[in-house]
Image (cartoon, rainbow, N blue to C red; front, side, top):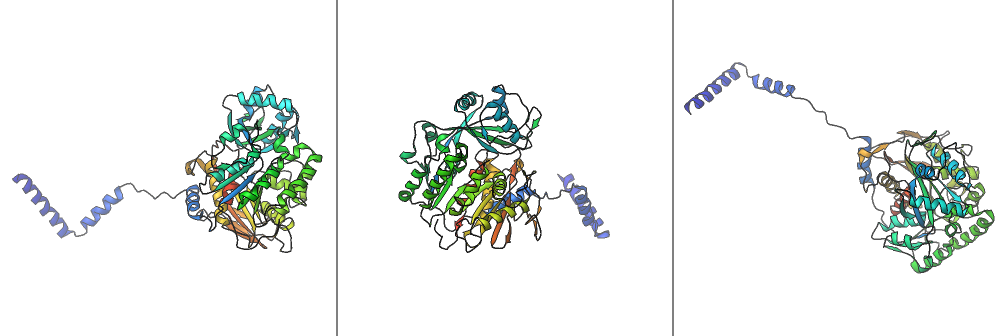
Length: 496
């Protein structure tokens, strides 16, 4: 014991001597030890992580929320299969792509599928031959790994709305027994909408980089086709509108117009006029959102846009293909562009959105049109374009739509930053032509806002899923989420 005590005393005397003769020694020793340790720089969060965190702060509920939402009128069962796998099972050989407005055979299906697969673009077509379609549908249902889901824009939008427990959701459409079983219990289906058999749509999915013959998909997407007479005639529309008086919704969402173009001009011309009359019966203080989908008939799209449906709705939702086709059908900006090349140019998209609101919407205060809002979505970013003074909370709304796209594509409830990537350019322009404003995406404040005349644009990037699990219905979910976070500005609405 005494030896240890003596040793401690000797060390104390020695240290005291060194400190007395060299007072700076302890500080030097500390510097030496500190410099000898490995140095760790703080790791800066990635752009994806910064954007995801900023979304959570930015996305706030509107002051006034919808209580009751009515959705119609297309509903079906989606049979989801591997597109290449199913075509191989049908003994169809790969070849070159060619677009067909209407499908009549397996060969038409193969060529149209390849045409869109090599672009990585989504599309939807009507299959005119009932017998051939039924044989393909049976093969799809029996294909290993085939999955059955709720389908149809209206039903999918209704399902998303039903995920909010405070909302009461009415769905009108051709609802068969299997679809009724798959629908959320919160969804109200009028007895008049129930039918004995289900309508089936076939969803042929492909993955990014997937190859068939000489065709290689640049990104994951899907090709949809059906022989669907009930939805094709929008047979549930009158039931839908008649149900609104009793249901008293705060918001009406309409979809399924694209299904009619495959039925032929004679049918759609008359049915579109009947649809306009029916929609006009909706109470004028209730906003109507129209969800568009893939179309090929320019005359049909022109009828929807100019003198028929678009002027009597308040809001529309659409993707990049539908936006460009709309411009092509109406002779709008960049209508000479055959297709988008990669990520759609923000300036071009903005030009078309502004043209729609000025030519077919309420951007002109003297206009009698009701259209004041467009929710545009593409893989890498979303834009909400609104006529000033009509809508509120649009920054949160566009961010909410982008966030749900980022999570749902990966099959998750929340964004996982390790599974997503930012693909949109961080610098872009407010227009494709002069005068134009140079804009920058700020990751810490990821909604970019600009104005052109009396139209405001809110842009949010999407964090694109690296390995998407399911792309079907993503546009419907985006539009529903955007509407959930939107509200009307306090002002009287014009008549529909």
